[in-house]
Length: 343
Image (cartoon, rainbow, N blue to C red; front, side, top):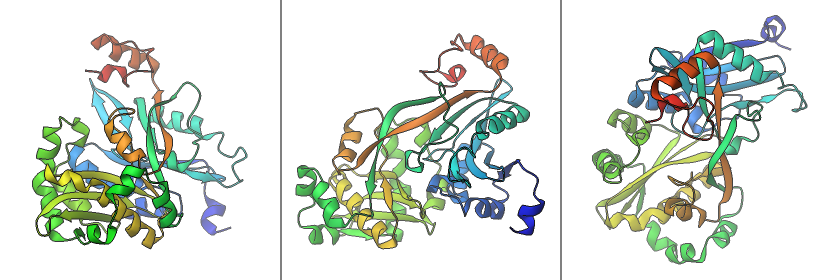
């Protein structure tokens, strides 16, 4: 046992701000975490959202968990949300998981009330396993994501592809010759086309990233940006962020003619990430459950995993008051949450 462990007072809960990058990274390093947990990703998202963003950390002596959160204000009250991306509560119990995490939900709620939070809408990445924070009546799953097991040989992954996908990737060596990785031209294509690409598709505001966010992400060592060309001009680009726990497909941008490259960009990422020893690739899901985007991802032979959201209320009276101001039902947990933010 270290001197720190012998003298630490448990439980220990704290918020680590983006201004404390070194502390954020040191706290996160020993724990399983996705790209969306990292300081770099949360900093990039804050450049777009402008929201105060922190890493919540709890240590009990037998358990250690973290969760990135962003604070939002509504009519003078504060609620919290996980920043864009697949994060949520992640960590471990030092006793093998046989009960050492039982106190965690109560500790988090007490902390949230002390901070004056009214409610929390917290996404839980399915690749991190069951969360002790997902209590009955608070965990909701409206859609699924698709995850590739990159520990399998690439030949096995190829066999698992839908027959139409295998047809698209036939002659891979010729297709790969049109792909480029982490080149300046790909970054410029992304910056030049991102806003128009998502505007033309009437994408939700959550995808409205500032150029500063995109430029910062593109320059990170644990982000790969893959571009597809027609032999010279960039037509499409896909971005992937990764940690030792796994990788996430962040987004794709293309011209109209560049849409044909979508599958080859992901297949190139599979090869690249496997070469780094990254164990899985979360392709994400569709905009809505079962839509065309979801079908496109499922045809890679990926496992279909439920995406869970925790919908928590910490201050019932204030929550009910805020709902009343907009005519929302404070008892509704199945729909938009927090209900008072529904438009």
